[in-house]
Image (cartoon, rainbow, N blue to C red):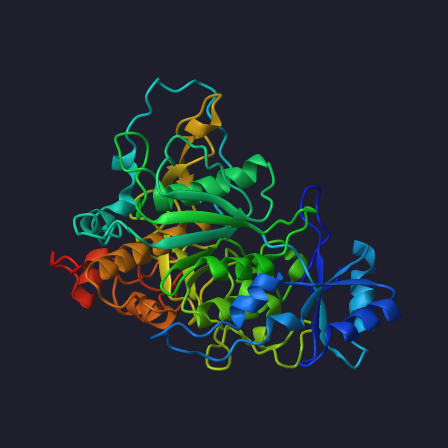
Length: 475
């Protein structure tokens, strides 16, 4: 049997593919049970009941509404042997109550430069201060000027809630002792590569501000994590996204550290695109942004032109309500899409030019460093036998770029809250990132028409919003 569209034959250790079923609106659970019996299948709701209830809660006061999110209760998943999923999807599409049935492959981590070898030499008793190596913290245009934001009350992200949605983390790292809430959903695998990735992301956001190791961009924000893996070691991205919704308030931030192989050649192994192209992920993200949650999503590392018209063609089995989310004129999840730009040093090309692996297009809102990111994990800057003291000097991809944008937004939200001003909404956060920052530059083979957007500049963002004064919020 051929590999179904949207998937590939998975190597050892990669999560299985998933068969998603979308029921027609108004379908009762009794109807679904009857279908399961008739088709001799195990069909389960995709989303936990808490997420479905959260979707129907009243809109928060002052929140702007986008397009209404479809009902999460129409989404189901089928448990069946991998080799049967394509055939079952085709069979399920013949039933009247089924609006769509499609197979999708697992999400993957959108990292680059993380294939270094951990150092075996033991580190000194006290870890050195690596902040001078964190060029992204410094003044624009080279960095995002987090150090300026820290001089303003609230500018360290205080009071802001962030949930990182990916696979696994090491919350016991020596440089993550403050402002972290741990894993609050899913079942993180004890896989070193996955833990390294999540830990590196946490370091960019929340590395402790002290004289040891790195400092996070928004060190006083509260960062929690939800794993995309369930208790059966299966990976489901949309339920992980919706599980975070009840844990966040309007103005809080959700980070999606994932991308997925997409068209035109799913089996090429490198044509990664944003996960929102798949209908269940799009609806999950749109549900979050409809509740005022700012969602930041990796654009992906597939060197893909997201404006290419072949993305207008749906996957086999997508419901008729699917529209290409890369064309925001017809479908808009409300998320902020992050591309990967070259850092100012390191020989990766002209500063702020598109790195060769980064996806690009009119929907990509903003860029961050996609190489040379100094953070936690991996052990190639500082290694040894204790992984809780590992540091990394070469993290990258849209994996490294996306938490930089989350950190910048958290600094702004903390400052707005301190001054008693309305927080950014998903739409105003996106507009702010497009209106401010250090402009994208052209590189060799990477013209500015291959849009990845500006690099955030916190001083510029604060100036634009009138936040540079030191006035404290009245109590």
